[in-house]
Image 1 (tube, rainbow, N blue to C red):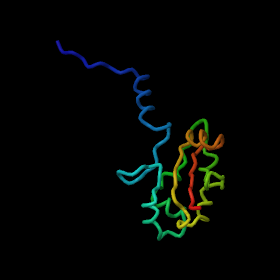
Image 2: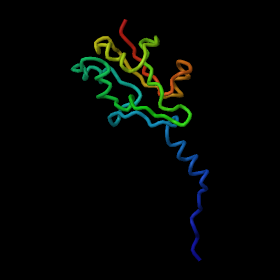
Image 3: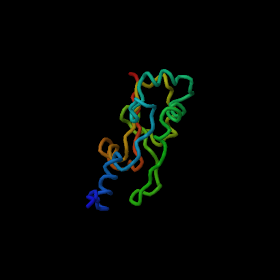
Length: 132
């Protein structure tokens, strides 16, 4: 008599699948060994050839600019940009930021952004830290 392997219920499979993604949204891309949610000074220094922060982030972390609509959030809105915790607006505001003024950049997924900055961050937030 052969023993059958245990079967997982559909509910168990769905729970495991939900736990496999961070916050229900895909994690932004980064080079292997790099934190996908943070752009370091080392990376920014290597990206100095780009004319502004928007172009550099498009090259370094293109996943940050993808929208992840759900049935609850819909496709409306965009990622929100903050400079030193002051709200600037949408991703186009990054075009006005020169790389030489930036000391760090961090991506917040939708739930993290709402915890850090309040409601209205359906597609997450980008926090830019500048030199004083």
